[in-house]
View: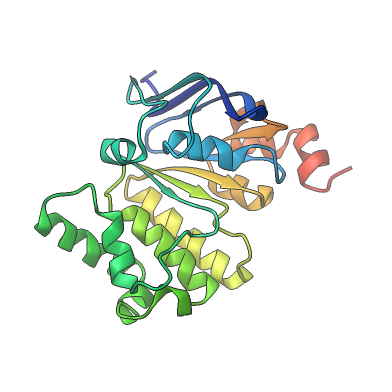
Length: 239
């Protein structure tokens, strides 16, 4: 079996004296969709932020393509091929759609490559092309989610991390976004998805890891977890 694209082993993250996550392990095989599941406060966002270099790692390891990246800067991690579309979007609301997208390509130096990536994002999200000169702060929630994902794609990542992409969006918008994620996956992009909507995430994922109070407690194929009595009782309303 080939080595996973991303491997996290006994990750611990602290915020001062507070423990964000205490023992998280997971693997993301190349070409897969892996769901990071759990209730609000379980540690999903903390794990993604640690991978992305936005917060320091207290203990454990994060390996990408066999290389330790835990503790690296956010800029260096993006350059290695990882990109995060964060919860809450974190857009520059006074800047235009296109300026926000171009900020996602900051690690890239080839103008032609940036231009090609920009056109690809506009092809994936035609609404962003229509609104390229519009200020990000005037857009709807669904459009802001498109922009956050588009900005992450502008670094041409090998691993796309999505933090709560369905949060606060209308069902029709969520369905459209997940169709886009499916397309990106079919085109070869590896995806790590943190999602509170457990049923939705299990439908689109190959593998999943469940977090509880900062610890990974269950891992396996998405199909196996969907049929696991513990998952059904805790998250899917069964029993």
